[in-house]
Image 1: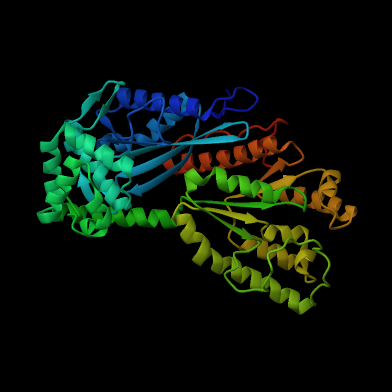
Image 2: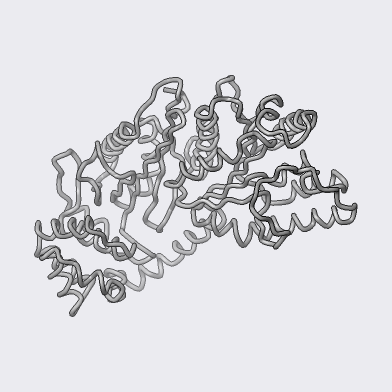
Length: 473
């Protein structure tokens, strides 16, 4: 086990199932010892050994406010890193714990709520649910059948998703307490829809709902006994929540830079797959956001990046202004909305590459103008320079002379030393080791960002195999 809290390939290797079991046990232990009351909301049937990667649980408001520190304790006990925190409602926050074992990355999502809200509407109060909770034989608290039935059904409607496994679960809960479940249905549906839902839950025949899903959804009562005063009090919280997502976006923004042959395309393909669970969706860009239209390309690989003659002096200056405008407008209208929605943005090259290889865009203007442009445009969260000896780069791609490859390699390393967000990764290693080091850089950066935002102690940076912090400084 490493001192930085992340399992390292050189120390031990745990399977995904082992990591998940360790996290679940730590979470149950911390909730039991340090919360006044809690209950697992759903998906608990095979806890702590088998479950999907998210664990939904409810606590009182006081414990909810303390949850960042409690989740940090879970991370410490389970030897994971608190990678990301997303406040998806004013009373709900998802935490993403990351574990790295060699090239394999595992995410587990403890998702906490106090009063259960969805899309801003109040559905179930924590004090009501927690006061009626019951003890599960596996050693933790769960909701009453009626409250879990209501929570599960509302969640399925709000997600517009009711599959066979969901309907079977609702039927089993209804069979446990039909009277209580009937009361919950009556709370949120009246008239024909309420009668139909009771009939479907009892018979486990949901065919009518599958054909009329949206009509049932429209008839849902959108709140549960929330007074006008309470709505007024909660309005500023909703506004703060929205502003927080815009000005402190929860998404990730990574740029991969480096000479041809450094392995950027391979690493981007790996990263967009491995981080899907935490960021849900990835958007990839080459060099610039392309908000402004440019010269059309056929999508084929560039095999002669220096083959075209340079632009004239004035045309080169105009190209820089075009790039700056594209970066700013693309950030406002493309990148920022995606980051605010917890998406992952990945760039294959960025404007920084032009400081090393301006011939790639046929630039013949002053070097200081490119430097100024690179300093002005919005910066990614993390810049990863994939570095390798010139001989290795040349053996992979021979599109420019060896002397140019050697020059670029030195220039990229000098560039990284002057970028505070840059991390250098040795891409001459075997691919699994490169993936490991890239993952380690990403997990390190976002776990430190999350700790800073939550007011938690910021963990120290990881140490790489050579003993440095991997920053390229």
